[in-house]
Length: 126
Image (cartoon, rainbow, N blue to C red; front, top):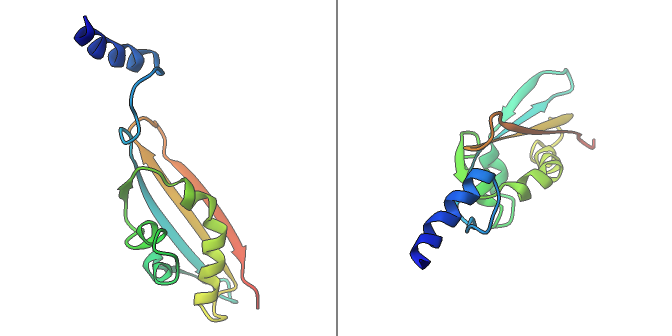
């Protein structure tokens, strides 16, 4: 009887979309980060997220190092919530060359039909 519950309960939860199933590490997200800077003439040029990885805390490095191609993780909410902070950091790395920086986070999950996209644009301080 107990074995039947262990099998039926997760299957039923999957069918109805909710339930008491264990999902701590059962889902993952694929993500990529685009960083585009604009100079005073309005010309756009890409920046490698890895350049920013050298200037962030160790817990943030995995989001940026190699972030210019799709990578898998379990949660990108911290990255999504700090895109504007990272764009300001990118401004500083350009030493006055960039007048604005745009960052785009692309997220794909196996459940989502369309990818989630988060964008910010920060005007750099002169």
